[in-house]
Image 1 (cartoon, rainbow, N blue to C red):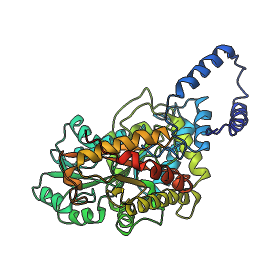
Image 2 (tube, helix red, strand yellow):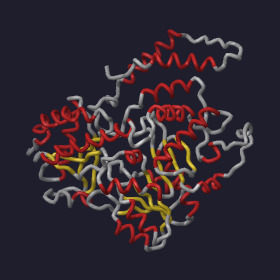
Image 3 (cartoon, rainbow, N blue to C red):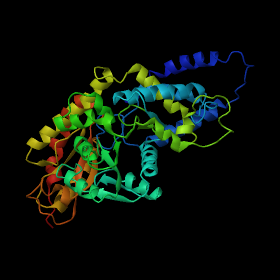
Image 4 (cartoon, helix red, strand yellow):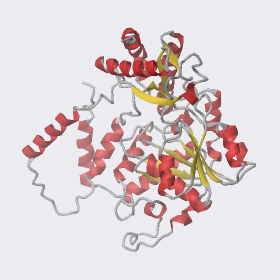
Length: 454
């Protein structure tokens, strides 16, 4: 069994305690058809078997990390109330818990004064940050690296803001010379710096971007949806470590608790260093804000209804695992990084494989070693498929020749893109499973490298 069920008894005890808080009300009868419920739940369980085993360490593909048990239980517990964190009228306790949880996240970056809240995910959080950026620098361009998440270009179109990509260097990081050439035009209002790109896990050179801000007038928004929590760990490389140390100097940050923060989907977070941006949200809504003069979260959010259960789950998780550099949460995150370093070292040392670049967080990009880009792409796809037959689940990602030509100078580029294997070792248990993952890859390598000459 890979699914935790032992903790379910705790939920019953917690529900009993929650229910006791409403003892003053007349009893309410619940006439649920238990047999019908059971039948539908079993049907759901049957359907849900059609998934990859995301919670297991042999799933090392996409960015899917199982929620902590306390997050699952707290989220479920909150659903018996089903709070809405738009206004205090719909989520009084959960709104307070959201503010406390967000304050702890802001504290990771050294921010005691800020404006911030949870969102339904990184996309909405980034949309909000770019909306603020566009409002403060109207008519100016948004820049992000060519390896940044595609959502930034899409969001810019939604907001009717000009967007331009910035070339990357051979390590899939934003190229500073290319960035400065664009800044010199005077047309740029915001630079999106990514700390943990989705495809490569690369960390853009934030200190160098901050230095450019001394000479050019632009905002810096950091998309740390994936990598933000690595600000707590001590085993990063020098460049990545310096980037995370500089986070407190930027204008806005997005981080996704539903990635490395051990939360269920969807739970994102957006933070602004200047609380004064709250003036941009000003609106009147007398039908929702009638019960309290205190700030309602809906007054500083573009989203209206938001799941209060997300805030409850995050608060509970951070209560159990505080966001401290010397805490259990940080140690577990460091184990993910250790797992990636070990696997990357084995890949780099094996002549059958090619490592795209040294991992900066816990994402590895690599490929079977063959003569041409088309052969490498075919072998990557083949290894992806045959590894799944052995219950090892990887991911495939494509990268342009312009990014990898310098890294793999002997490769014949007979096509403009090459498909690589991408592994997210984002579970602490991956540290203990690296040997098994490598055993499977080692055994399957001959089949993956077989070239069809017909």
